[in-house]
Length: 197
Image (cartoon, rainbow, N blue to C red; front, top):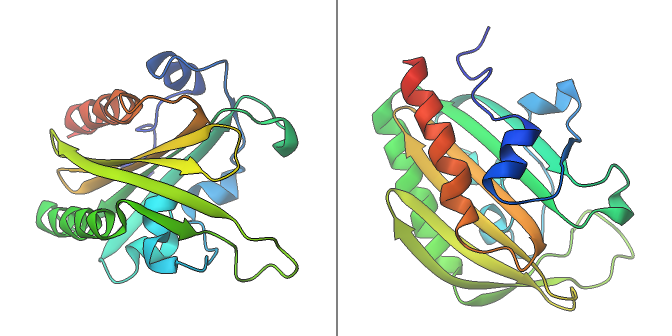
């Protein structure tokens, strides 16, 4: 059994932490051990747009991961609120700290930009843009707010932290999602990591 098992909170705990509607798990067991692998036009910023993105972790020395995707509906067309959380283990705390610094650098490079998030592997897909706002760092969490262009006010909050040898990577999307959701999700996971040691 991996040390990562049991670290991610339940759907009920997540919904309570971020004042979300009731959430369902959309993650199939086989998908809980794998990063997302899509490529967007501005792929150097993919890790800022999406949590648990494979390119964000390439070459960082990660050794294992767990992720879960939660939403307020099973049908993709009906989803109004969604959460992705991942915990990623590294060999040691120093390697995790190096990943966090790399993540912070990428967040800052992609801040205050409109990104082309069209999936390059999907033919006949229309253009899709997401605006990244300012990046902040507080209490060991680097975070950013994102707004979908033409998304009827839909926005996302992204947050990344490293605690001991584990990175915590979260994304929350909905309508008028406040920036307070990043620490609200990350801090309880960090506390579980402390308890597990």
